[in-house]
Image (tube, rainbow, N blue to C red; front, top):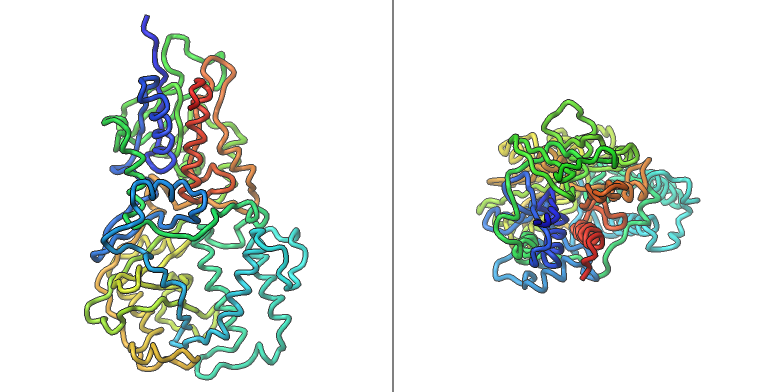
Length: 525
């Protein structure tokens, strides 16, 4: 009698899926103990990791940073495969982002004496919310009264203003259509917009306050990978035999058997995967690593046959957790400067400060979708490729615009901020920049994570109304008390309670689920 090997199918060839596959193959797969298959709906591996090229430079369309090198498995792999060094330049390679120039709408370059206190205030407020410091000395009240990070930050800024005199707040800044309070509000909003890209929350009033202190950062510096983030993915996949990874196979339905009495006793495997191309595949265990956005769409769009469905449906507690958790969109916009713009070489790291609210002094030439980006900078000091980040509604709008529209609107916007390079580099004392000239951008490239049906967004966050407990519920496997336990397991950044939204969180989740199966088969190494 031939003993049937357990078949483990992993849905998704991103960081979580390939980490789980790597662990399972090295431990028991290479010895022939299991049948292993990685199913990927797209035409490449990597998921939300996608190293590309633009304007002659290596760029990251998705994951960009190793968020702290201390204890980071991503950093460890990068060192082992010698990906931290490259003969070619790469994104954010030289640390120049520590020296920004902050410039307000209509060309008003801000003195650090105005910018720094607000920047320090914002950092202290976020450090307090994240539990990094115990006091901010700003009269911010009882932290238990806040539901959202946005409400906490709003109160912090109001308390800061309460410590200033009315005369200081209303002080008019010459030639800038600003007073001191308006500028401080706009500088604070600039930092909030940066925080939106960190978290993927469209609005910080949607970001749960209490969950902020549960989130864990790896210690040490944050760095980028010289040979590109995709080198990590390539390393994880390199040990898998040919044929283990199958591309272009999108799963649209997962059939499973939640009750012992419904289990098949005809020798077939308990889980059946249905693909969009009409084919099927049976499995003993399936590790689902699709994005939270895909899971949300599956429970929301009941009539869309292209969305991932479970039959029978997921348990109510898991559906509720998926519904409550937050999942947002963050996109990157790369722009190449023309050779004629060499007067901006090197182009500075600009922090952009926009008028807030319904101010009548807003420049009508600046479109709404640009007003909540926080900065524009070259990807490294001497590059002609510029980068801006967009989150939420603005990120989704960016996806709908043609390259020509983006080129014109970004060029016009930056031209309202900049003068010729000689004037610009001299003006750091709070005067209006004069002799503005139009910047010449020649092409753009953008990510489109929101409209990509394989992702439907970028990464997760804990929304108001949810909690870390919902992440734990999402991570729970679908088990039975019968002969086929651990039918459906879940991995991915959204399933890690303290490291969600990161590649190392996805890595840890992949290891967790691989170990869960290894323990089941008593094959721990």
